[in-house]
Each structure stands twice: as structure tokens, then as C-alpha cells.
Length: 222
Ligand code: SAH
Ligand code: DHB
Ligand code: MG
Image (cartoon, rainbow, N blue to C red; front, side, top):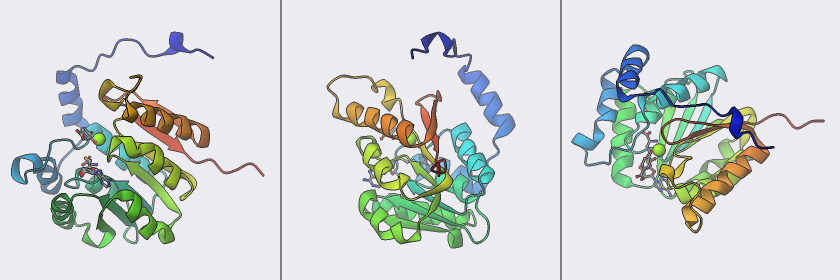
């Protein structure tokens, strides 16, 4: 069923309005500030989540009482700190990061955020690391933010590891605007990601600047 006529209209989210609302709702302490500035201090790219998306992840994790969270693509730990701070004392955040330098910066930032005991940063290709932590499943939440051509496979591997009521979230699901490009392998793969999530989970793609997919695993009917 086509639903173009029911989509939201013009976006009123100007930079000024976004700055103002971020300022009103999203507070950074020193640890979050440091992680958000890693591109200035640690030679990493400035590709962490925006403050609103990061806080949304924090709220979602809190709402479902998440105890075990997996993050695929951690960079300097900005989104990881938000996720980790939603966990109870005995919770655990598994951060899967390919780049050794980013991983060490993330460890330092998570430690400074008071999350040293509630987080593990695992270096390597996420598909390999997922095998390593599969024994810790079921997971309450999986956040995918790594190589964009890998999302479909990450979804295939992790949906089975989610608990009932667990969440799968993906950033950059508009693929920098290239989602509908015809011959682009990353776009084809990202479209499969959307299809698989929509098939397996109760889901939505929230129109953040680059699209944030949120899917919830509903218990199988008996
Ligand atoms: N979630 C972070 C930003 C992640 S940027 C935040 O919001 O703060 C994307 C990260 O994915 C980069 O650090 C990159 O090194 C990592 N990455 C890319 N390919 C990967 C792979 N195959 N496995 C694990 N991490 C990967
Ligand atoms: C890139 C990756 C991201 O996760 C993002 O949010 C923005 C940019 C990138 O690889 O360029
Ligand atoms: Mg991203």
C-alpha cells in the first residue's frame, strides 16, 4: 500500500533550532565532551552520532531496561558512553571496533566516563567479534553504526541474538542520501537491511538527518 500521502511534510529542523533544542535537552559532562572532540584531539574522523540521536539511544536502552548491549562501530566511544550510561551496575556493553587506535581511544573515554567495568571494547572485524560474544546472548539491544555495506549481514547475525522485546538500531540508514541509488552495492545492501529488519521486527526508519532504523523483536506467536 502506498503511503506517500501520509508522510511528514517539510522539515522545520533548522541548524539554529537543532542547536537550541540540543542545548536544552542534551547535557554533556567532561567525558562526553572529550569523546565528541576526538576528531580534534585523537586524529579520528568527526562521524559520531549527533547528540539527539545519541540521547535517544540512551532513552531507548533505559526504557527497555537493557542489561546487555552490543555496539557495532564504536569510534571514540561517544555513542557508547550514552549507551553504557543506560545500563545497571551489572550490565555490559560490548563495543565492536575494527580500528585499533579508535578502540584504545574508546577504552580511555569509557573509563573516564566511569564505564570501565561495564564495557568491553573488542578489536577486529565485527562479524568475527560477534562470533566471540555470541555465547553472551541474548542481547537486549544492538546498535549498528559501522561499515554501511555490512548492515544487512549484521542484522542477519544479530536479530537471532536479541531477546524478546529487544531492539535493533541502525544509523545512516539513508546511506548519506544514496539509499535508492540503482547500481551501488552499498545501497543494494542497505535496502536489504531495511527489508530484513522490516520483515523480522516491528520497525520504523526515523527521519533523522541520515535515517535511524529502530526495530523491536516481538515474541513469536504461539
Ligand atoms: N558509533 C560511533 C561512531 C562510529 S563511526 C559514535 O557515534 O560515537 C564508524 C566506526 O565503525 C569507525 O570507528 C570504524 O572504524 C568502524 N568500523 C568500520 N568497519 C568495521 C568493521 N568491519 N567492524 C567493526 N567496526 C568497523
Ligand atoms: C560515516 C560513518 C558514520 O557512521 C556516520 O554517521 C557518518 C559518516 C563515514 O564512514 O563517513
Ligand atoms: Mg553513523
